[in-house]
Image 1 (cartoon, rainbow, N blue to C red):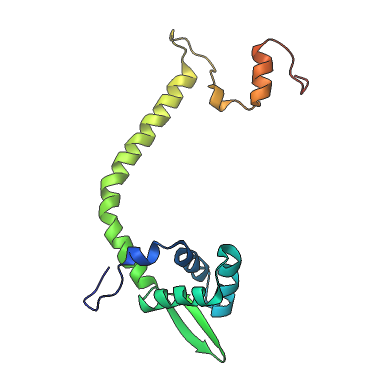
Image 2 (image 1 turned 30 degrees about the vertical axis):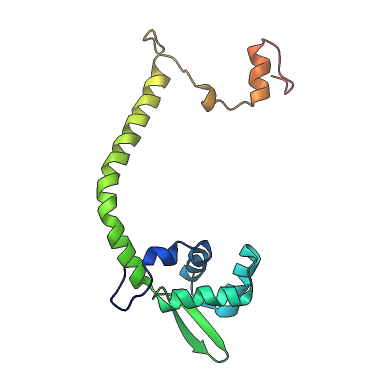
Length: 152
């Protein structure tokens, strides 16, 4: 993710929200510098020279390629450094994925148990207040034993 030429670390490049957004745009397909600039200026409120500087950082660090087409410069994502980042992250995925999968299993088991049994062990169709479809106002009215304004 760095090389002997002293290029910027990949996460320094990807750490900037403007550059991440530019990469998202380029991932959709090749775009002109002007097209990228228009979107980024609108979304981030930065100047054209600032957008150009972000494009330069992406290009200089291998995340984007540029080719001239007449008077236009067309940018595209270069997937190589993104693959390198993905490979580096793989070591962390191997660590976290089993733990997150186990957590998801336990959460699902807990939800199933809450839906299928009351504290006394009798089956029920219990739904927590977080699972309810009615609004907080409807719940407060219903909890007082009064019909809610919605007519139910």
